[in-house]
Image (cartoon, rainbow, N blue to C red; front, side, top):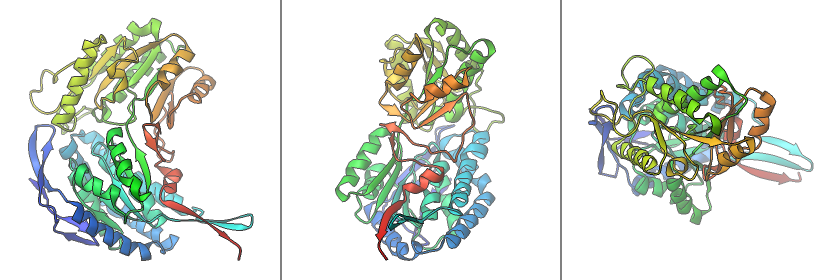
Length: 476
């Protein structure tokens, strides 16, 4: 059993002031794997005091000093990647192949990308008669989710450190093990006291305290749109900057010029993408738009891809799909599947319940719904599970209209034979990131959403902007 009983504040592992504990449930078997102590507002106060004290000196460090710190973090991180991967498999059920590659690897890439950008970042430049300076915003509250736990803190913390900010970090209480290991990495790398402070806790207490705290200058939050609204409301009285990466219901348009094997590949890969991380990704391509006349063909291909997915214990060998994170999440997914059936969506594969050979653990059957209309609940709400909706369109304009008919705008996907056409359709998408023809992920590209998918951008060069204030110095 793993026990998380210490927070990291002002460069030391300290006893929390909060006394509540929460079991950490292994989603593969529904058994507790350990416990985490939950902090309170007083723990946040201590962390904010430390972060403010550290900001005075850390904000004045040189580019060379911060580069050296990032390089030290990268070196220390690489020695603990195996432990990070193991922790994420245990706490959130990511299969070991995914934990070792994308889950642990993505965090490392964000630190490496920040170091690369910092080398030549223009913190000051002359513009006409004034000097333009970009300066660290101050103390940052970082609130991160459980679905990509290391990725989501690294893409916030790396630019915060690179720009000279200090931080108070609340990881998800559902995934505390990887957070604790990463904090150990930062300590081993020599992050100065008070520059990064870790407080475990839940959203209603610790998250709310961070959002509202007058000693915090900006909040970066990743999570549901519902929780993002609460963060923004709590932050409003202190006029702090709020950067948010929230929910999604991303469209995946399969254009009508794809035929034969190309069409089959686009449809099957779209379904396979829905099963990565058990569908628990905010940018998952959950609404697949296909020519209405080819709905039955697409449904058959997607169903075949779904049935080929191996759902198994996350420690199993091979490209398996593991469980979803929790009983609450499993119940939510089951409810949405049942609602889709009741509203008339055609079940092409999967459906309610666990896979037949699994009688415990939060496993979900890879599911495909065909003949979905865009007003159905399954097409409107974020499922956060391996569930694909197939929606038919009449022509390109109809596809664009349906794709944009959503309160979300995080990502969009387009597959087509004509590259000029796919690029033209991308220009019509109301989404922060558009992926063409299954292009590989580019972690230097900005990531963030339109509409209720959030504001601001993370990753790469654009990720630095959230942690900087702009100052104009006029005259000499």
